[in-house]
Image 1: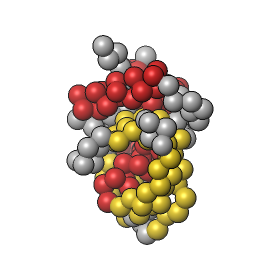
Image 2: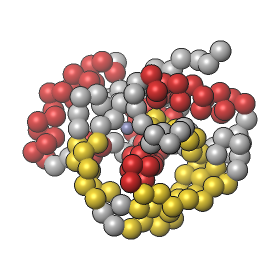
Image 3: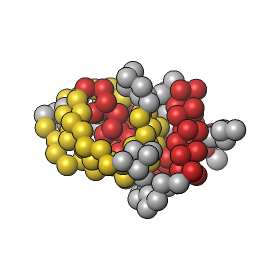
Length: 165
Ligand SMILES: [Zn+2]
């Protein structure tokens, strides 16, 4: 049985914590990853980070349409270019922010089997990786919003915060 996870919403302090690196990948981490993938698909997301389900560990899952990926202890070694795209977040429903991020990245991470992976990412997968990696640093898309946008979002954010309690 895969445990059902609850998506933590904006206002939950776990979303602002820096996630701890994973020292050992055991059956409990693999179970968490399976449950996170199920939650990601159920909520029609393209990525989900462990802090978003209340677990402050450096794990996220992603699917850019090419199949599910589990990313553990990610590192961005090199970035190039810049592109501004509108993003949403399962933890901040109903809010979209234009976020400027690198166009391509070179990354290192460990997968669910404990294998060390090195990849060059572009397009949607680079975007997801950067968004989810932000979650592991306690950073959210609204942090990229301009003051004018933040003023527009204020009411909505207060509503989401009430739901988070
Ligand atoms: Zn997010």
